[in-house]
Image (cartoon, rainbow over all chains, first blue to last red; front, side, top):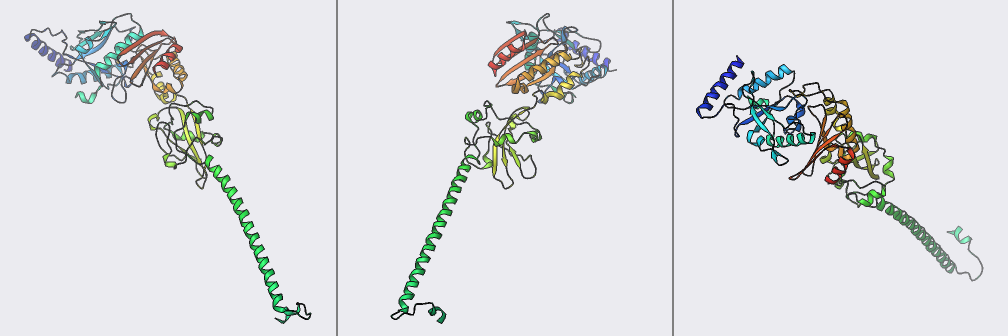
Length: 162
Length: 285
């Protein structure tokens, strides 16, 4: 029933987008992206984020997994992340929130380097990916993560999502 | 009265009043001499006291006394480098193990007299804590700003039971800079695959060892850095000081990658050794 609701929500959102001549899988600059935080090690005691909130295991991942926070469907995400946390046997702490425009504005070596694309999954039609350039050194990815931390600011606790 | 007269000469022409006069004069002379002697003794006593007082005063100019920021000269006398600030850890009980005998050898001449309450550390913090029970008390001035620092300096004052300062001095405490993050490091070492909710690897024990060795090699600066796990199994360190940020990554092979942000400028590098990062940090901090 939960997945039906979220897909029903996505369908309504898509119809609304089409009425405004926008493709529902296109992520606009004004869209808000959220990344679920499932470890206490990715946030500091003052609520700010650590770099590892936006770091990947490059052996297994090519992109940072995020979701588009589309209102009024945002209440789905708390439930979705809680289900994910239970499935992966981790704790759901909250989310990091990023503006798509800020992510796209990240420049490395004088060029914009991050792409944000919608990547719906069966369990999350609002899912998206932030693609990082491949085959770079660790310092490069640390610098990207540092900039994303600056974009995100403080983490949003799970309680605030409800 | 008759008995008294019997001892007097009985020759003709004796004038008893004249004899009394002589006697009185002798008595007066004796009294005068006695008084002079008494005064002399008193003066000698006073001189002795004065001498003692001067000794005491001389002692006082050396001993009691407190309250100025420790100067570079003061630390030179201790054969220690001048620390940037006086740091005291949160857990003052640690100081129970400080060797008080070190304090007795400290030359106090660089301190000015003042009340104990004005005792300050180089960074301006004031505080008094009694650590030792019974007749001796050691008072430390905790530096709140550096409360979590695991290595540094403490200034102590040692009182006797009547409140006189016996000595004053410093002690270096050298608990491990890693110790303040030891709990976190243990947690990091225990992380299992997928700890970040995505595809993270468990953290490499070698990477943790390299990070710990690096933090220890930094000495006092090491406590500035907080460890964090990296999803690829390496260990990161994050440190901030004077509006500058340093991010370090330690791989299981000991290679270090770094990102340094100072103001608007960013400097980064990879596959460097610890000595290179040391030099960078020396310049930066």
